[in-house]
Length: 157
Image 1 (cartoon, rainbow, N blue to C red):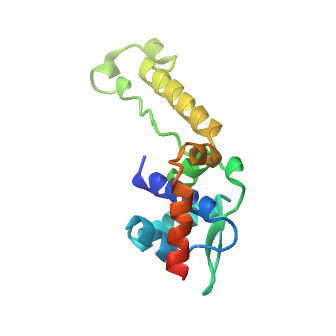
Image 2: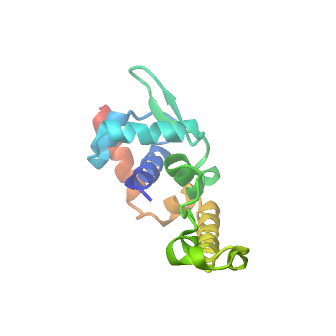
């Protein structure tokens, strides 16, 4: 999983703590986390396309959550940024090299590696789908929401 997932989740948390009153620009979010704005913007646009965020252009434009935090799962963010494809891709290497000499009957069933990896990925996806942005907010340090709002007031002051 790329760092864009971490960036997206933290930006969503800041947007949730700021609330719907004002949108935050890519530049402000990039400044908050000391991230490259162009790369961050690509991740934020992916979240807009997935319906996690909304965006508006202009001087008062920027990003907002598209849904309440309890309606945004961690899997929503991961899938938006990483794509919906499975993380493990079996290329059946067991049938190459020395495996090419094995009888075809050995390959009628999925290999154990593929089955184990898909089972693990399914569990991982289920766990991410069961947790929401609101869950992350509830587990954050108590000072985090106020710090986000103070920072927002300072940069907009």
